[in-house]
Structure formats: structure tokens, C-alpha cells
Length: 290
Image (tube, rainbow, N blue to C red; front, side, top):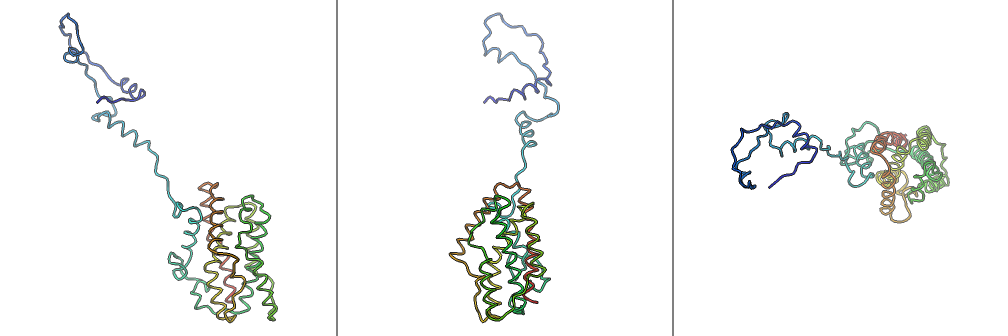
């Protein structure tokens, strides 16, 4: 079967080709049909330089292979959406006791299994007060939306500020003195304010980790502390109106939607902020044990 070579290839081929003439033939003067020419006429082609010994089709394949694009790198969780990428990175920063995907070694008191904790009521109050400051800050930023995309996260049902206010009022009614916010909470609040204006990808990382972590490990910590200090009383901090699974699903969709407009570099920057998020939340969590 005849094969067709693009014009650009045929031009370069013939520019490097020398045609050798055969000795003159004595041909009859009668009508020379195509059958006769095919039998008696011949032209010899010398293989073009640079691809000696390669059939024409093989040479074409070599060129195609060298110009083919490299496969796009896939990031863990990317096929399911950006929230899954954030979850994957966050899980690796847990210890094995905290999550099966965890890779972090236990170095801090709050990283030990919760069953081994020895919380104090004073420390727990400091934790609640500093947590409220952080949630106040997050929810004020979301409401003001200095970056338009933050407005997507208004009224998600995950908000915790009002719940914490009710819990602190309950402690006050029991005769406890409510402390002022301390260093860890103030430092985290200031950092969130700084990020919110100039670094939306980093801010979204903290938003995700703060709210989603509280619905998982945060609830477990609340139950254990309540067993040891509060006669199993469940605080408002650990209650949500409506189906929590559905609330989380809705926020995941919003986060994925916002991240769709980010470049790969911006997404990676968001993921890289996860470690700082864990550090700040860990500093506040440690207050329970003081």
C-alpha cells in the first residue's frame, strides 16, 4: 500500500538525495505504456544522511518520540478534588496513634494518646478561650471577605464562635473565672489576620484544617476531657445544627470550587502551609494540659 509523507518531510528528504542515472537504454520506438516503464525504467535513491539504515517509517517514529510531551504529574488525592489533597497532607502530619496514615513522631505532650492525658479545668478553660479568639477571627474575616472568594464560606453551619460563647457563659455560672486570651491564641489570631489580606491560599489552608480537624479529632478530645473533668457533660462546642456529614460535604464542594481557579503553584503553596496550621493549633491544644 502506498504511504504518504508530509510535504515538509519530503522536501527535506529530496534536498539531501542524489539521483544516479542509469546507462542509456535502447528502447523501442513503439508506444511506451506504464507496464513497460515499470519493468525497464529505474531510479536509485541514496538514503539521506543522518538516518542511515533506517526505513522511512522508522525515522518518522523517532522524530515523534522525541517531541512527545511528558505525562502530567499527578498529586496524591488530586483526582478527587483539592480538598482530598489537603486531607492527604494533613493526615501525614498526625502520629500513628492519631491516624493510620500518620508519619509524625510523638514529641509533644498533646501528641500522646488522649487516654493518657491529665487535663486540668484551668487549662481547659484557657484552651476554650484561645479557641474562641481564633474562631472569632476566622468568622470575622469570612464575613468581611477582603478576598471575594471568602464569601463562599459564610454561614456554612460549621461556625463555632457562638457555641463557645455559650460554653464559657456556662462555666462562669458554675463559679469559674474566665481567663483572658493567652499567647498561643493571640499569636494565631494575628497570623490569620496577616494572611487574610495578602495570602488567600495560605488562609484557606488554615480555614480548612481548623474547622475540619475539630469535627474529627476535636470531638474525640472533647469527649475524653468531659469524662475526666465535666462528668460527661457535652459542651456546645461539640454540637452542630443539622447533619454534620452533609455540612462537611457542602464545605468540601465550596473549597474545591474556590481552588479550581488556582494555579498548580498556588495549590502547592496552600498545601505547604499545613505544617504551620498544625503548629498553631497544637500550641493551643497544649493549654489543656497546663
